[in-house]
Image (cartoon, rainbow, N blue to C red):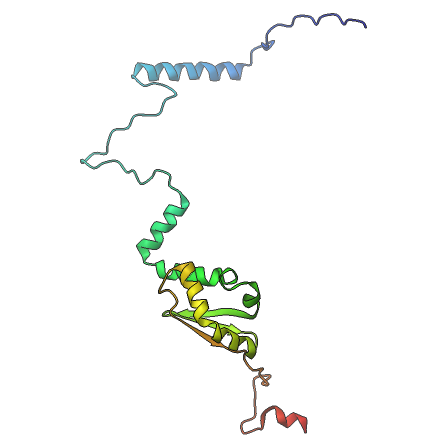
Length: 179
């Protein structure tokens, strides 16, 4: 094996010719620091601020807070606790009732403690009516007691035979088209 010759010593990373703009900036910085020290300030440290005039304490509400705390304060100040609990029921519907039941029943409205649920078929509507006491217990376990007091189950809506802006009054409905 052959040994390579040692690298030649290079001078420390000094520019060959000083940049006049860098030198001017460094001088300006030294002057500003010297003026600050002459005034009794410590360059590079946070400024010491005195309390506001008029005997008022400085504002401390500008300190950073967690987003969850801010939202909780907003909800409680506005009195939206009930609306948030209702939103939790509607938003977590598949978790509360299970994926199979959530596939065939969707919450529609929630007014004054009554949750209106629309079923995909009449058989699912009947099943939901039979399970309403169990669903109320599950909802109370998830959101707290008293949020949902009643579940009203609606079946599927009938198809409309009306098309267009005009219609005939006194007609026999869809039977007219079948002859």
